[in-house]
Image 1: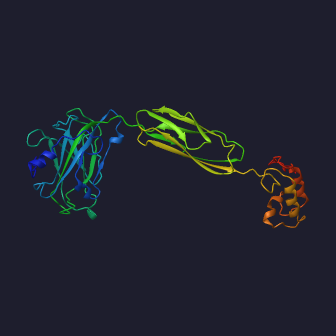
Image 2 (image 1 turned 45 degrees about the vertical axis):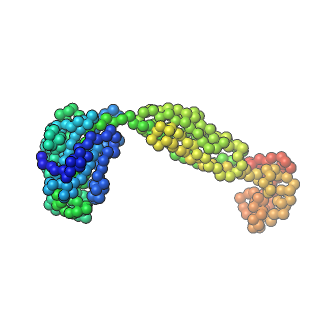
Image 3 (image 1 turned 120 degrees about the horizontal axis):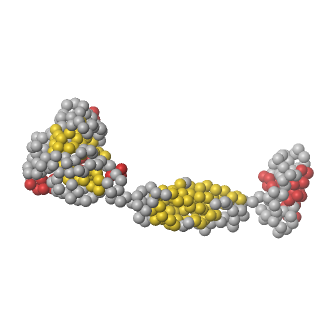
Length: 373
């Protein structure tokens, strides 16, 4: 392999041992962000805790001057302790986005493999050459992907690999096509750490209605851990008319059922909003919420003109003033409480219902008093 560094300082930085940071690369050359559609496929979230994978911990770029005339993808593989690995197989694949190879075939129709070298001048770097040819339209979709073999390792380190896609002979700040540039990628064997718990719940909301003075039956919702480890949660709300049982719990792989108890019999007519909050400070999302919307409907007593819940002499006077006679539509909106049967007049049929609902002063009426008449 041939590779040149501009300065000894640059080489020292380039070959530094990766820090023990999980998932995100320790260093990502900002010039890589200028290359359209170049990206990292990060597999960390797919690796079960305690299992190993090849994490990209450094990605660097060399322009036409820094490359020394080369146009290669360089790959180095490190053990978990940061020491280099010799003869570790890795792949370069094409066209853009291709990460599918036959691990048993080193050179295929859309990929080629190479191996990392040993200590000394090569310092455990391996390389594959990029080729120019037709440039992608709009300088997007450069063809090459690179990743470590997921089935073979002289160090016995076999597992998934992060993948870099969208590399090619292109310098976004220099020669746009057939540029002699290098990409230098360091992969490190990393053990996936214990995954943090995450709160999930269902449903996300309740919408309920109730008649004034009545209560609601219980509702239930479920809580489960959609992450790793153990979810240790508490449940609370911001309304005096709600309670949750139980108000705390733990979950690993099971699903817990929480009961909502309502105490809404004393609420005045109107709309109410509340939020149930499930909390675990150690979880990735910290909290999850459930919205509760409640409408308390006013009790309507037939014949109660002044809404004082009784039907008395005052209401009788109002009813008399609204009598229109059979077949004569009563159009006065203030007489709406007098129209007690299905038609639009106020006559003897409405009076029959009113009479059945009459209670007297301060004696609460029955909303169903006119049924069957």
